[in-house]
Length: 159
Length: 166
Image 1 (cartoon, rainbow over the protein chains, first blue to last red):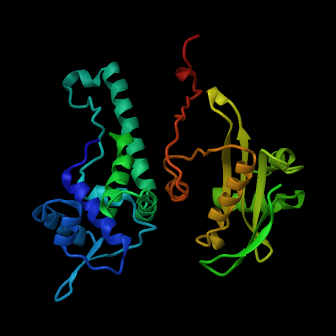
Image 2: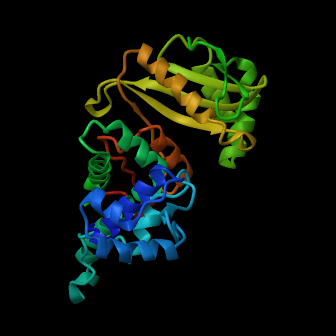
Image 3: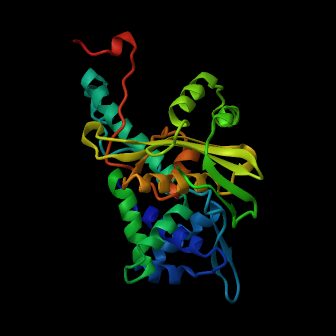
């Protein structure tokens, strides 16, 4: 599975906000912390607000605030907002007529198995669990990098 | 023998005690397991008690969590050695907490105590196996820091047309 940039940005933003649910951070502050495009992140934030994971607070001192229970919301809940499906890159379904053969179907079952494991992994890791893991590896220079490293570790076996 | 100690759960203020199970706990464990799994398995648990309860001097554990003196949870595990070349490691194969006591950190406390038992046995890792559809238990074990292990679980259907040719 190769996730889109929007998905990665959404994970960074939601996790950064969930780290301190009382905090209000502007999109620019989050973008700067992770070295990502403010313009692209702004689009992602709008989608997170529409989904109810983030609350947008207007006015002076306003910003974005996490909205939810980090012990209940999983990585899958965020990823599913941006990815149409979790199809494995090992996908023979689009190989034309040969995909329907015995070998084609057997190969597709391997892709399905990878996809099932990807979904189960993302559904089992709550934001709170990932943040706890991030805190453990927080020996890196910045907290932002700690989260980024942890995310990469989590997703590595799925690709 | 796992030590028994009463602590006040910081999250709820309840008095929680974790101790080794005795023969008199069979009924409570069957009740808790039926409540959490939806299946009554008294014969299975009787067999487990015969194997895991008599001494608990090491490597096999059945622990009970009491809340205000009433059994509210249990965990079962053992040290397994050299399966397919694996060095000895702790295995947890059953865990249950009464629905009415969920979110009081009872499961975490039981796991913490069985981890201590395994440490005393000299093992350095603990494994378990959970259905990929069981997100509640998967999330719980993940929250303790458990991740995918180095072994892959495999299975085969024993339907006639699935059995490989000899």
